[in-house]
Length: 269
Image (cartoon, rainbow, N blue to C red; front, side, top):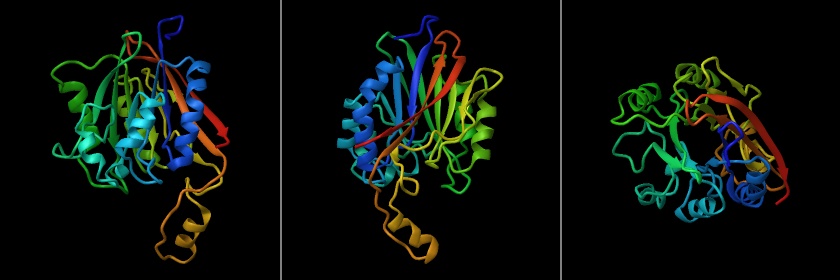
């Protein structure tokens, strides 16, 4: 379902939080694909299992519901049953800058129904996060030193804490990838734009989780962390779900993005 100009429309859904987020995606995605004329859907699924982690059965549910590729971040390791699953050929990624010995892979090539190829890459920032290998160097290795060139359309989910590191990655890859989208903070930013050399960028897509919450979790379990400074067990909140996503339009011939638009829906589940 390419555009009249032959471009692809690729949707990226922000961090799916627990059962409410999962149900909202499954309920909304079929209509969303038709309404927005989407060729491909990518979603960050590392918080799908009760707010922390991903299981094989939940990954299969998301993939069966219309998501083409699942990306992740630091919480991908929270459910040990996902480890062996990551070593299969299922389209679920972990950040590319984890050690090579870690389960899974950090990028893949997806083939759309019309036969176009899209490279999906997952990387993680280092500021206030795990001290992994440099994502910048890892991206250089993939983009510049791969045995075979990647297809022109290349989308990066950069799972990262601070906006300056995300900004830096956007500018660093401008013209080398079609899109750099941030995940992890669960709060959508207002800076979706096209960079000068044709890379679509946003600092954070935002979450797909309960709106009346603290980044997806119930007020009762999060507020005591700030008021009493004692550990609490977070639980996913209830109520209407805010679905946050972006749609990137890009040319399969050049990889250059021509548009990035934010998509926000409030869904009763």
